[in-house]
Amino acid sequence: MTKWLYSKWWKWLSVVLLFYIFIGGLIVPLGPGLPSVEPTLFRPDSVYTFDIYAYNTHFTDKAAGKVQLWFKNGATYYCPIEVKIIDDEHLQAKYGVSGFTVTSPEKQEFDVVINDDIDGNVIARAAVTVKTPQSIDTLATDTLNKACEPEVLHNKHALFVFPYREILYETIRNTFYHVPMWFVMTMMVFVCLGAGIAYLGTGNLKYDVFASRAALVAILFGLCGYTTGMLWSKYTWFIGIDWGHAIRKMMYEDIKLAGALVSVAAYVVYFIIRSSVQKQTEGIETQESNKEYLARRARTSAIYSIFAVVIFILFVFIVPRLGGVDSLHPGQAGNPAFNKYDLDSHLRMFFYPAVIGWILLGFWILSILVRMEFIKQKQES
Amino acid sequence: MKKVIALLVALVYSTIGFSQSVGPEFMLRGLKLYIVIGVLCIILTGIFTFLFAIERRLKKLEEKG
Image (tube, rainbow over all chains, first blue to last red; front, side, top):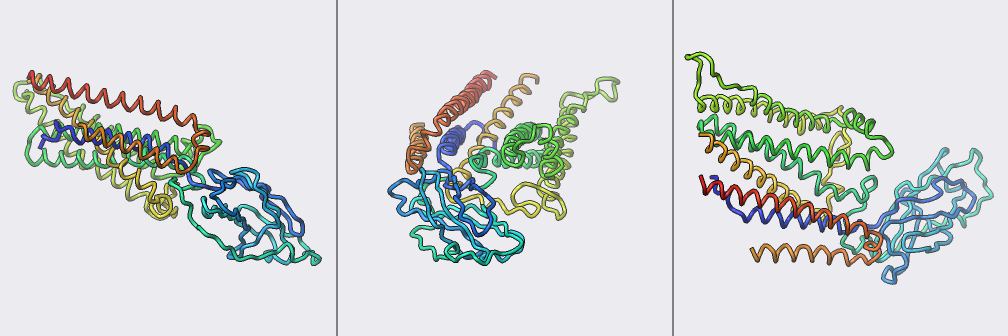
């Protein structure tokens, strides 16, 4: 069983995969997107010049072909009066609506849609809002309301890029570094449980070594997951908020973060309980040999590891999915599921190797810690 | 070992190939990115070297015992 500790191929595989995801995961650019449109508010019956700032687009590239732009309201596309390409990532569009167009008495939101042959459809949802006057000016002409039928060659971009997601932007790469940490922690938690049960079943102290070292690796990766997650949230959910407030908000607004902290703490407690088991040296009747002491410690740890894994499952997998609790994480508390929107085929090319690579690294660290403990026990005996 | 190194080189080159499909502006804008990648590679190399060095020492100790 312990043969895998000494084999090297999977350790080299971990090296290859982690280099692959660190280099590839950072070097592949983000897909085209529209981060801002100015002005964001306009009134009917006047022509406005909108500055449209794009990201990683190729408007001046010859291969981009005809750059088209529409203002989309509901299912209706409206053509602007004029579109001017300033540079690869900047367009100016003249557009306005007449009072006739505006049906809502308060305000209406328009999407801005750009299409070219390289970037495909690039959309800024609800980018501009038309503010209607109290009295509609019937003098407005229909020239401002050119509804048109868009004709496009390519809906999707033809680039090898990561998906452009609002809020996440370039930080989407952290998917390869943050999410797998929790996968490793989960694996280690179950290794700890499995080895603990194996010890209770066989009484072989070798399993206790595996269980305790797996708990240590679980804490290590849990803390790494927490660190990468905190950094990620600081640059996505909590922009402009100082660290103190951000951490407080994380704990209050996301049950998963609080749950993960409790889970990591449960494994810290595992070591506190483990170290609290003292060797009984006083009295002839209660005096125990080193082997008896190790067995008692292993039994206590193994039984606690069953409770710890229940806490882990409860706080990481069950509580965040309950109705009525709030979470900013994808797939939780009414937020769209991670897989549905954020993981496209390009991300998967890096995400799955990342998961395998990090898990192998976790097992590599575990194998070293286990071997160290074996040597230590051998020397002591 | 040679196969593993060949796989590593192939994977790294393939990712550079992907990046070229977008054009040079991303690279020019992201010059800092190369520094980040370089530093990360040095850190990773350090971690892996450390892990392999520990393995070698452990092997020696195991053989001695």
